[in-house]
Amino acid sequence: MKTKQRMRSIQLLFLTLLFSACAAVNAAPELDNIQHKAAIIEENKGFMATFSRGDAAAMANLYTADGALMPTHSDFVKGQEAIAAVWQSVFDAGIKQAKLETLEVEGEGDTLYEVGKYTLYSEGDKIADAGKYIVIWKMEDGQWKLHRDIFNTSLPPTSE
Image (tube, rainbow, N blue to C red; front, side, top):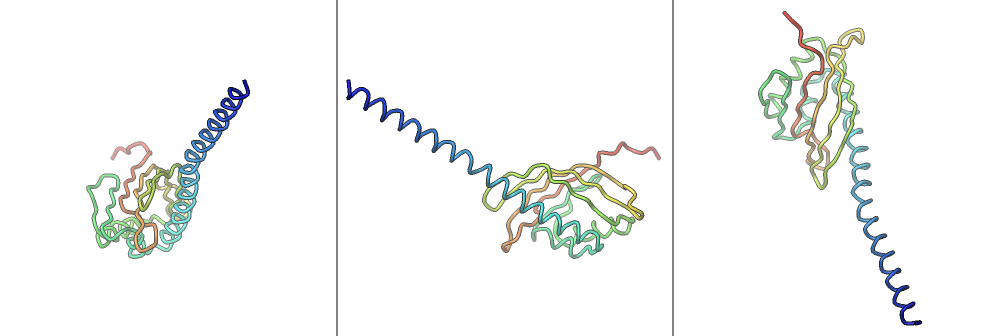
């Protein structure tokens, strides 16, 4: 009888340890995603500050060396020089400020993806565009950089 009780105690202890280990393993990625989201939110603060300065070359430097931008109504824009040209055209169109809202960040290692919303403002804090985006981030030279950046408007089409 004591042997059966001892075996049940050992089984109960084993199951408790097993469930605790499983819970710890499942909690670790969630913690990583929280840390990743915080890191990307910080990177986006830099993006928004650079954007507000209207510095197209600095904007392009936020992308990996082989980064690609996929803006609304456009094909792939590849490489930092071409990306700088796109951002310059945005600034030339009178866009003064960008606000980013990170909704999701997931990934591991040196690759993350972000899903979010953006709002672009012209002079006088007038909303010029609002939409959604997905960015694939890559760690390059110890810094998170935009690797693939696609965005499109949520505003209805305008008739011309």
